[in-house]
Image 1 (tube, helix red, strand yellow):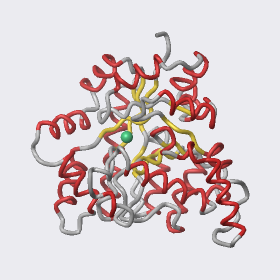
Image 2 (cartoon, rainbow, N blue to C red):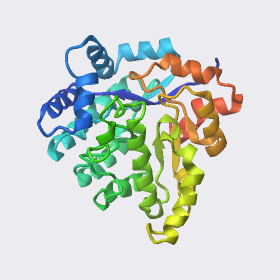
Image 3 (cartoon, rainbow, N blue to C red):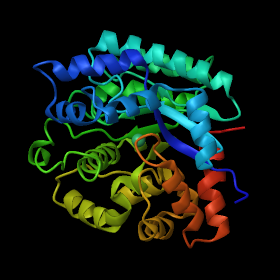
Length: 338
Ligand code: MN
């Protein structure tokens, strides 16, 4: 197929962050969701964990060869969940800066194939805002990514405002990526593997998106641009009902009135990606509800098969115009790729 495939949610990790995860998961204060994730996916010396580790830490030949094999022309790389968000503020800030240096170096070796989103540590908002300046400037990052909650806190809290202030000032897109549900949310999802990517990650991230919208963040920063994965983390399906019940909640004084309807922020400030999703009906719902201009392709390598992601979007019965927007042009303009 003669189309440039740009994958927008592709994961990597540095060895030092991976080691930090093992330490954090082993602590008696470990968050319950993160502890299971670590035990089952990242931890131990199982062959599966070793394969994931090797793919996540490779930013060179192995990754480019896999992109070639899968038909991915360009990958936008970002830190794997939970990134630096299980560490203390000082450690997290340092780990994030080092990860950004490693990523920028990898991108500079393959600029025609790779770009990067910066990692920041929300635990130290001032440091995160400063790192965004470095990322947008000398490091040439195309945006930044945060893995949902940080130590049970969500980004609508006022203490994080300076991160978004910097993001809007620098016009740096923000990717809100899933992770396991926060300690407050994970309780009933501790059984049956519900905390994981089939359900819990979307509940966590969709809830996070709703907190950002309902807090009035986009009245304060109307130019803020946010990407979310998994075809919108369930929100496109609920969009009308969200508006409808929001109006009732405003009427009874349960939530402050925003300048616009929740769905208007979702349509204007957000863009969704196909990461982890290979359902044509779900894709069509997003095209109908949001429009093909608000959807980008993502494979979520190495957690998902990029081959399957490509097969899905190559063969979905959508118009060739829409396919080109989703594979190529939306990502080029959203991340300002030259
Ligand atoms: Mn992902």
